[in-house]
Length: 500
Image: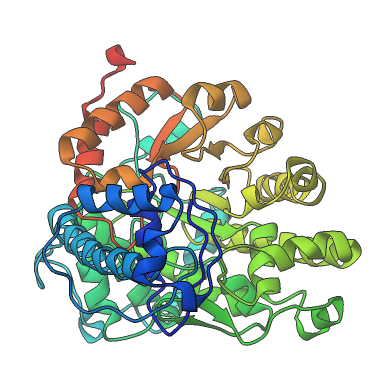
């Protein structure tokens, strides 16, 4: 372990590399020389530990002459040893970056521009357009069904996922992927080069086209999920949001204190403010010919609150967690308002043609179990109960990422999502009466196809054929290779009942 200071302007990555290179040598050095003492003669007089460390370093690494590196002074190592270490560390860093680029080229094989299904459209102007009275058409069709005594839209031709959600027997395990429409698809990036994220969300024709992209590429998918975003609810409440490059969503303001709740519309007209989502679901169902179901979704109250308090995407939700402790009553007020909006929002999606409705609580794992059960679980159970009370035929799913699933065993949710951090056996014991969904580690999709197939088959066999929907343990990420999902789906389809 080396203790030293660095001065002058230089790349901090060098320090990390130096420590990584030296970590293999079990040497501890505790020294504190002044810069003036950092000389070749001083190095010779250093404790034997320093000499042995430098010697071991020289013997272990024999690279070519390094490029010039930034100048610095170090306490305890001396000028000669420091120059040797940083020079070789710089070279090692360059070699490591080169290896990473080579690995990326091998692992992430993106199709060349234009290499996507023939029917894919990548320019907004060429996307199939719905009639101008799309909203009125949607409402008329739903009204006709209700007048005829129907409580739901006709089932899709492939209803495997819906039967699994109801606990019925299926011929094979149904599958889809969270964030299956998104930045890992080159056709998605081509479309987004002509427009922006929230414009797509708010334009039914574009949302439909993006929703269909993974189905065209992977026709064995058993479901679509409407392309939208969980943050459309805060937007409907008066928090304008933009998708910033490299940083993600960012609101115009954050909820810093309870007084900021006055800036929100706590009871927005859901049908007026979020009709574009309803239209997108209806149009997608029409465009896909009701071949497969179109899943609707919402963010959970706690997850939405987290983004609203933080002001957008963040690495941790420290400020939001503080709210629960510092402002418990204001927190409950906000969570209750979000809960009621989510109910109306999900009912509107069901009425538009989405038979399965998912509540994503992706920030569930940010809270201790007791705090989550106190502030969040009651609202989530309320959502499931109220949606089912208003629409008895609706199927409802919850994804409490990294949370305690057992809290939802006595809820009205039909499906409970499983994070990759939970084993199939543990999930089954937590929710024995529920259909489970998950839980492949998304990072596996970077592996070679055979490994993806082997591990996916093992996972499916552990969950079993019944009461199971195969999915990822979280969503797709932008750098995923398009070959990964293909191997994943092939593996799921290959598992027979006899193998489970």
